[in-house]
Amino acid sequence: MLDRLKDFIHFMVVEKGLSKNTIVSYERDLKSYIKYMEKVEQTASLNDITRVHIVQFLNHLRKQGKSAKTLARHVASIRSFHQFLLRERATESDPTVHLETPQTERNLPKVLNLSEVEALLDAPSENSPLSLRDKAMLELLYATGIRVSELINLNLEDLHLTMGFVRCIGKGNKERIIPIGKTATNVLELYLKDGRSKLISKQNQTQSLFLNHHGNRLTRQGFWKILKGLAKKANIEKDLTPHTLRHSFATHLLENGADLRAVQEMLGHADISTTQIYTHVSKMRLKDVYSKHHPRA
Image 1 (cartoon, rainbow, N blue to C red):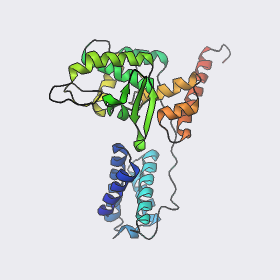
Image 2 (cartoon, one colour):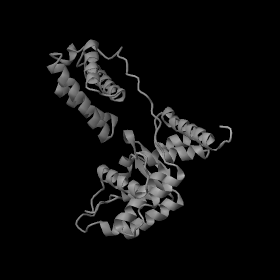
Image 3 (tube, rainbow, N blue to C red):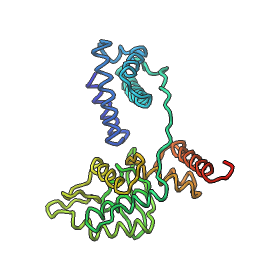
Image 4 (cartoon, rainbow, N blue to C red):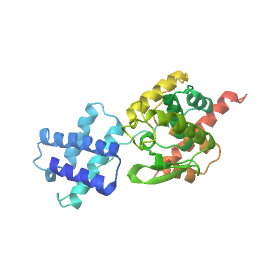
């Protein structure tokens, strides 16, 4: 069974061009699925797995306290796997055909208001190379709405400051060109001049845009640690995630009258329904403002 899983993962990497994080997620989910089928259901091959077996596996996950979102992700992984097996004629049928996906609650993304954004962007106030880097990263995230994984994978050649845009490779290996505002451009120029030039080592002439104190490409974990420290410094009590500035970027654009399709393109969403959640955030914020300030609210 694990040999077939290797074939599937290879297919997802080569044919689908999915991100590393998505591939890792697929592999982890399916390894636990196969282990359950072998040890608990004692299925001899993938061809012996039925819909009942899969339902039993999902019940097993529920008993472990897994959320509906986690269950839905497992179903998506299992369904893709069995569809692949059927196409490759490794199995005779697809047991996921009538399998229902667990309903998940769609939580509204948490966003910062303008004063909180300004406080966070002003938190790296020193003139040290690391502080210049941190400010450049935050300004770029808020200016473009790119994902943190896209941010840390940027190279020097992806930045076109004279023309005012950044090029990034998103999910599914899709390229996006996103405009950068004047404020972010000025901060990035300062970082390149007085920050990155001091962080890079003579031994490692990397093309990575954002570097750690060793002169290597900054990691996602490294950024997350930096963000938590800056949020504390800015006295922001909200529970920040690496996606918070991306959510704030989209919400603030829509609040100021931006076209939904344009925001979808900048965010790199394949489906506009994913972008539409930010319109709900805007409505909730308007309702909150009304409740606080209208004399008869």
